[in-house]
Length: 322
Image (cartoon, rainbow, N blue to C red; front, top):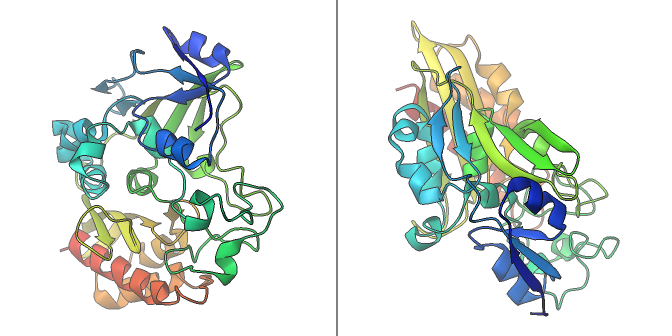
């Protein structure tokens, strides 16, 4: 780890003006610094900023501060009661110790666990060294993405929380040198394309201040289903976040997002379109799963993810409409 300067911001405006890398819980950035993947020359500590509250706004939306710890958010009574998919997703991620440190903003910005990205002995990683190639394409790619990939990158997005927030259609609020702005989570994450090093829509100096979730759909049932190699402290092979409402046995509202299979939290629009207005039956869940995975591009070791993701969708929809 190379030398760096450290300062503590006393306001959001000051943090944005400092020009360094922001650090909250440090559960991702510190690891990357130890591995030599990231080498910031200045760290700006934002843990003292007033961004650690969860509150219901007058319009019914839920406001989640960027510094709210994952464990606190998962166990918050409003989240458990009205945004169950988010609580379930958070509790399926990492370990209790990490959840006690990790923040909402940091979780949104956590970077891939692709081994070729995190091991600097491999120079051919376009995400770390633009233009260097993608070692995962011809290497060990069992955990890699099958949706949203390109010839330059197949790295999987790792967050469970972001998948749930995608299904909930969250809005990310940021503040930087040019002022404040709002970014729909659907527009926040970039596909790798030819620039996999550009992972999100943040501009230099911008800090995530909070996230808002739409007013709860009180008649919905929400499910986060995560399939993985072991029962805890493991990243998803495939996961599904579902928010669904039924009436008279028919689906009248549904949102589906996938994790473990995409280069970003993956909104399954095709599945939603196939489900709307249909009876809540297994045959329609299967048709939706087929639609969601029709453009999958598996690699040499991760073809199993196509069928696994299909089954994950069917099972999650079954649970959400039972």
